[in-house]
Amino acid sequence: MRRLSSIPEEATLSFSKSISFPEPPKGFKVSFVGSPPVEAVESDSRVSQAYEKGKSEATEFYQNEVRQLRETYATRQDQALTGLNLKANEVLSQLDERLPDLVMSIVERVIGTCPMDKEAVEEMIKSMISEFADDQEQLEVYLSGEDLSLLKAMADAEKQPQNQAGGDEEGFASAIAGIFDGLDGDDALLEGYPNVKFFEDSSLDSGDCQIKSRFGLLDGRIATKLRKVEEELRGND
Image 1: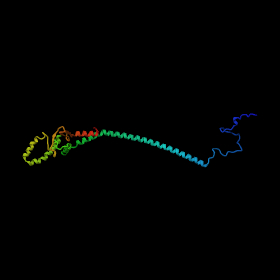
Image 2 (image 1 turned 135 degrees about the horizontal axis):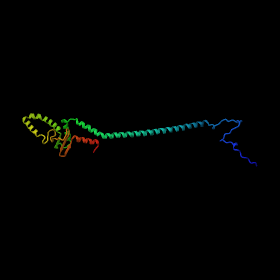
Image 3 (image 1 turned 120 degrees about the horizontal axis):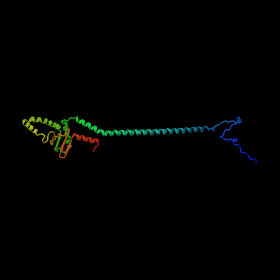
Protein backbone atom coordinates (compact mmCIF):
# COMPACT_ATOMS: atom_id res chain seq x y z
CA MET A 1 0.00 0.00 0.00
CA ARG A 2 1.23 3.39 -0.97
CA ARG A 3 1.60 5.77 1.91
CA LEU A 4 0.17 9.27 1.49
CA SER A 5 2.50 12.04 2.11
CA SER A 6 1.48 14.82 4.46
CA ILE A 7 -0.37 17.80 2.98
CA PRO A 8 1.57 21.04 3.20
CA GLU A 9 0.10 23.65 5.49
CA GLU A 10 -0.11 26.14 2.63
CA ALA A 11 -2.57 23.82 0.83
CA THR A 12 -5.07 23.60 3.66
CA LEU A 13 -8.02 25.97 4.09
CA SER A 14 -8.40 27.94 7.26
CA PHE A 15 -11.00 30.51 8.34
CA SER A 16 -8.26 32.39 10.09
CA LYS A 17 -6.32 33.04 6.92
CA SER A 18 -7.19 34.84 3.74
CA ILE A 19 -7.01 33.11 0.37
CA SER A 20 -5.77 34.95 -2.62
CA PHE A 21 -6.40 33.85 -6.16
CA PRO A 22 -4.13 34.67 -9.06
CA GLU A 23 -7.25 35.36 -11.14
CA PRO A 24 -10.81 36.17 -10.18
CA PRO A 25 -12.67 32.94 -9.59
CA LYS A 26 -15.35 32.06 -12.08
CA GLY A 27 -18.42 29.91 -12.03
CA PHE A 28 -19.84 31.06 -8.65
CA LYS A 29 -21.19 34.22 -7.01
CA VAL A 30 -21.71 35.51 -3.51
CA SER A 31 -25.31 36.71 -2.89
CA PHE A 32 -24.92 37.84 0.77
CA VAL A 33 -22.10 38.53 3.18
CA GLY A 34 -22.80 39.04 6.89
CA SER A 35 -25.01 37.69 9.65
CA PRO A 36 -27.87 35.52 8.60
CA PRO A 37 -31.13 37.38 7.97
CA VAL A 38 -33.54 37.89 10.89
CA GLU A 39 -37.29 37.75 10.63
CA ALA A 40 -39.29 40.95 11.21
CA VAL A 41 -40.99 39.63 14.36
CA GLU A 42 -37.71 38.73 15.95
CA SER A 43 -36.20 42.08 14.88
CA ASP A 44 -39.07 44.01 16.46
CA SER A 45 -38.68 41.95 19.61
CA ARG A 46 -34.98 42.73 19.80
CA VAL A 47 -35.64 46.43 19.26
CA SER A 48 -38.28 46.42 21.96
CA GLN A 49 -35.97 44.62 24.37
CA ALA A 50 -33.16 47.06 23.63
CA TYR A 51 -35.53 49.99 24.17
CA GLU A 52 -36.77 48.65 27.50
CA LYS A 53 -33.23 47.92 28.61
CA GLY A 54 -32.10 51.42 27.73
CA LYS A 55 -35.15 52.91 29.43
CA SER A 56 -34.52 50.89 32.57
CA GLU A 57 -30.85 51.83 32.68
CA ALA A 58 -31.68 55.53 32.13
CA THR A 59 -34.36 55.44 34.83
CA GLU A 60 -31.99 53.81 37.29
CA PHE A 61 -29.27 56.33 36.45
CA TYR A 62 -31.47 59.38 36.98
CA GLN A 63 -33.00 57.90 40.12
CA ASN A 64 -29.49 57.52 41.53
CA GLU A 65 -28.71 61.11 40.51
CA VAL A 66 -31.87 62.40 42.19
CA ARG A 67 -31.16 60.37 45.33
CA GLN A 68 -27.61 61.73 45.51
CA LEU A 69 -28.91 65.30 45.04
CA ARG A 70 -31.45 64.78 47.83
CA GLU A 71 -28.78 63.40 50.14
CA THR A 72 -26.47 66.30 49.30
CA TYR A 73 -29.14 68.95 49.93
CA ALA A 74 -30.34 67.16 53.06
CA THR A 75 -26.79 67.21 54.42
CA ARG A 76 -26.41 70.89 53.60
CA GLN A 77 -29.79 71.64 55.13
CA ASP A 78 -28.86 69.82 58.35
CA GLN A 79 -25.59 71.74 58.48
CA ALA A 80 -27.40 75.05 57.94
CA LEU A 81 -30.02 74.28 60.60
CA THR A 82 -27.34 73.16 63.02
CA GLY A 83 -25.46 76.40 62.42
CA LEU A 84 -28.62 78.44 62.95
CA ASN A 85 -29.41 76.58 66.17
CA LEU A 86 -25.90 77.17 67.47
CA LYS A 87 -26.14 80.86 66.57
CA ALA A 88 -29.58 81.17 68.16
CA ASN A 89 -28.39 79.47 71.35
CA GLU A 90 -25.38 81.77 71.41
CA VAL A 91 -27.60 84.84 71.08
CA LEU A 92 -30.00 83.57 73.75
CA SER A 93 -27.09 82.87 76.06
CA GLN A 94 -25.81 86.41 75.56
CA LEU A 95 -29.31 87.77 76.23
CA ASP A 96 -29.56 85.72 79.42
CA GLU A 97 -26.29 87.27 80.57
CA ARG A 98 -26.95 90.87 79.51
CA LEU A 99 -30.72 91.21 79.91
CA PRO A 100 -30.77 91.33 83.74
CA ASP A 101 -28.20 94.14 83.76
CA LEU A 102 -30.14 96.02 81.10
CA VAL A 103 -33.47 95.61 82.91
CA MET A 104 -31.99 96.63 86.25
CA SER A 105 -30.37 99.69 84.68
CA ILE A 106 -33.68 100.75 83.15
CA VAL A 107 -35.59 100.14 86.39
CA GLU A 108 -33.09 102.13 88.44
CA ARG A 109 -33.27 105.05 86.02
CA VAL A 110 -37.08 104.98 85.98
CA ILE A 111 -37.28 104.85 89.77
CA GLY A 112 -34.75 107.66 90.03
CA THR A 113 -36.92 109.90 87.85
CA CYS A 114 -40.18 109.17 89.66
CA PRO A 115 -40.73 111.69 92.49
CA MET A 116 -42.58 110.46 95.57
CA ASP A 117 -45.80 112.21 96.54
CA LYS A 118 -48.20 111.62 99.42
CA GLU A 119 -50.31 109.15 97.45
CA ALA A 120 -47.25 107.14 96.45
CA VAL A 121 -45.98 107.05 100.04
CA GLU A 122 -49.39 105.98 101.33
CA GLU A 123 -49.72 103.27 98.69
CA MET A 124 -46.24 101.95 99.52
CA ILE A 125 -47.01 101.81 103.26
CA LYS A 126 -50.45 100.25 102.83
CA SER A 127 -49.01 97.60 100.49
CA MET A 128 -46.47 96.57 103.12
CA ILE A 129 -48.95 96.70 106.01
CA SER A 130 -51.29 94.42 104.05
CA GLU A 131 -48.73 91.63 104.39
CA PHE A 132 -49.63 91.39 108.08
CA ALA A 133 -52.68 89.22 108.69
CA ASP A 134 -53.74 90.96 111.90
CA ASP A 135 -55.11 94.48 111.38
CA GLN A 136 -54.64 95.21 115.09
CA GLU A 137 -50.94 94.42 115.04
CA GLN A 138 -48.81 97.17 116.58
CA LEU A 139 -46.44 98.32 113.86
CA GLU A 140 -43.58 100.78 113.63
CA VAL A 141 -43.04 102.27 110.18
CA TYR A 142 -39.66 103.82 109.36
CA LEU A 143 -39.41 106.29 106.49
CA SER A 144 -36.95 108.78 105.12
CA GLY A 145 -37.28 112.34 106.47
CA GLU A 146 -38.61 113.51 103.10
CA ASP A 147 -41.38 110.91 102.89
CA LEU A 148 -42.33 111.33 106.55
CA SER A 149 -42.58 115.09 106.05
CA LEU A 150 -45.06 114.49 103.22
CA LEU A 151 -47.33 112.49 105.51
CA LYS A 152 -47.04 115.02 108.31
CA ALA A 153 -47.79 117.95 106.01
CA MET A 154 -50.95 116.33 104.71
CA ALA A 155 -52.02 115.30 108.20
CA ASP A 156 -51.45 118.86 109.51
CA ALA A 157 -53.41 120.28 106.58
CA GLU A 158 -56.37 118.08 107.49
CA LYS A 159 -56.18 118.97 111.19
CA GLN A 160 -55.80 122.72 110.68
CA PRO A 161 -59.49 123.52 109.97
CA GLN A 162 -60.49 121.59 113.10
CA ASN A 163 -57.97 123.50 115.24
CA GLN A 164 -59.24 126.86 113.96
CA ALA A 165 -62.79 125.93 114.89
CA GLY A 166 -61.71 124.82 118.39
CA GLY A 167 -60.39 128.23 119.46
CA ASP A 168 -57.12 129.54 120.80
CA GLU A 169 -56.86 127.08 123.66
CA GLU A 170 -56.85 124.04 121.38
CA GLY A 171 -54.41 125.76 119.05
CA PHE A 172 -52.03 126.44 121.92
CA ALA A 173 -52.32 122.83 123.12
CA SER A 174 -51.60 121.59 119.61
CA ALA A 175 -48.54 123.83 119.37
CA ILE A 176 -47.20 122.53 122.69
CA ALA A 177 -47.81 118.94 121.57
CA GLY A 178 -45.96 119.62 118.35
CA ILE A 179 -42.79 120.30 120.27
CA PHE A 180 -42.70 116.67 121.40
CA ASP A 181 -43.83 115.14 118.10
CA GLY A 182 -41.60 112.37 116.83
CA LEU A 183 -39.96 111.58 120.13
CA ASP A 184 -42.07 108.45 120.55
CA GLY A 185 -43.21 108.14 116.96
CA ASP A 186 -46.02 109.84 115.12
CA ASP A 187 -49.41 108.25 114.87
CA ALA A 188 -52.67 109.19 113.15
CA LEU A 189 -50.69 110.08 110.01
CA LEU A 190 -52.42 107.42 107.94
CA GLU A 191 -56.20 107.27 108.13
CA GLY A 192 -57.57 103.88 109.06
CA TYR A 193 -54.39 102.65 110.74
CA PRO A 194 -54.54 103.76 114.39
CA ASN A 195 -52.07 101.11 115.56
CA VAL A 196 -49.27 102.30 113.30
CA LYS A 197 -46.55 104.67 114.45
CA PHE A 198 -44.17 106.44 112.10
CA PHE A 199 -40.49 107.15 112.67
CA GLU A 200 -37.82 108.91 110.68
CA ASP A 201 -34.72 106.95 109.69
CA SER A 202 -31.91 109.00 108.19
CA SER A 203 -30.34 105.90 106.64
CA LEU A 204 -33.36 105.43 104.34
CA ASP A 205 -33.82 107.09 100.96
CA SER A 206 -37.04 108.45 99.55
CA GLY A 207 -39.20 105.52 98.55
CA ASP A 208 -37.68 103.23 101.19
CA CYS A 209 -39.78 101.75 103.95
CA GLN A 210 -39.15 99.35 106.82
CA ILE A 211 -41.76 98.01 109.22
CA LYS A 212 -41.01 96.51 112.63
CA SER A 213 -43.44 94.21 114.38
CA ARG A 214 -43.24 91.62 117.10
CA PHE A 215 -42.34 89.13 114.38
CA GLY A 216 -39.31 91.03 113.13
CA LEU A 217 -38.40 93.51 110.41
CA LEU A 218 -40.08 93.76 107.01
CA ASP A 219 -37.60 95.33 104.62
CA GLY A 220 -39.20 97.43 101.92
CA ARG A 221 -36.19 99.38 100.77
CA ILE A 222 -35.91 99.99 97.05
CA ALA A 223 -32.43 98.44 97.01
CA THR A 224 -33.83 95.27 98.60
CA LYS A 225 -36.68 95.10 96.09
CA LEU A 226 -34.28 95.60 93.20
CA ARG A 227 -32.01 92.88 94.52
CA LYS A 228 -34.94 90.45 94.64
CA VAL A 229 -35.93 91.38 91.10
CA GLU A 230 -32.35 90.85 89.93
CA GLU A 231 -32.20 87.44 91.63
CA GLU A 232 -35.41 86.39 89.89
CA LEU A 233 -34.12 87.60 86.52
CA ARG A 234 -30.88 85.71 86.95
CA GLY A 235 -32.67 82.63 88.21
CA ASN A 236 -30.84 82.57 91.54
CA ASP A 237 -32.39 80.69 94.42
